[in-house]
Image (cartoon, rainbow, N blue to C red; front, top):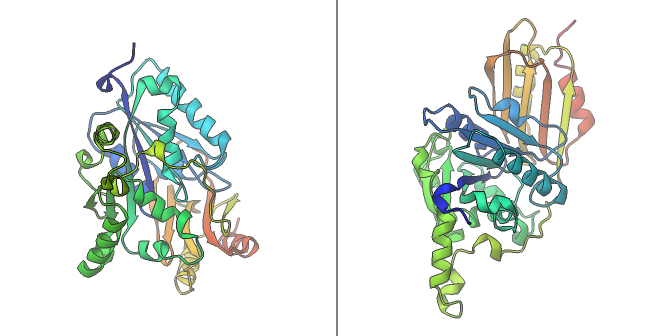
Length: 345
């Protein structure tokens, strides 16, 4: 007997272009006093996993997938199904599952996972696709001349959203917010747009949407031969599943043993800020600082870079990991720069 929607575990697909604030939002969700048991599945674009180490301060479980992008690698999609099946077999029932896609993912194939002929369809319900938008940098990605307009991931993520969170409004003017909002509304006429700074938002605005149940009802009511069909927000099963990333965008992952010199890293960050960073989309790192008990994190989007202590090192092994995502990345130069920030033994 098929479970009713209220008996199924809701699943939220959290997406957004590189640096939009997905990890910040996850930290906010997991630390809020909402009383829910939430599992987070993270899919990263790159050689090494780092996002799990950036999500802290919660007892919820984090599952990292680094064997390829779930939107275009068959093995990664099967890995996603495997993780979800494991979650469903647990004796303690979850209240919600959140799947964070990579910043270069097309969310449609991820959403399609929950319409497959699989046992997870009987036990989960796709609650909605939430897209975070970096209000300061999104325009340059929507207008990226190096990406074919039909396969622009930033566009795909906005078009498929059920709710759009316009993040980082503290970094832009009211006129810029208006311009971005208008552009987004033209791409997606049906999704509600809400605003946030530091990805802090009322969780009722993004969880518990039951968006795909409403979409099914809308689809059943619309005559596909009418003029309304052209403007209808497409359901996830109606879009082509094939997808490939912009081949010019690559990832460089660097791991170093030992401890870092905090002043050397600060000087390096200042040097990067002075450079032309149009092709450096995203940086994120975890560092062990000499003579400091705190784990330091680095977040960068173009020339907006934050480096700060995050949490005390606990039982996890201290490490130095850095991921760069962008175009024309010079691995050897980046490796040498970071190695130059190592503290003397």
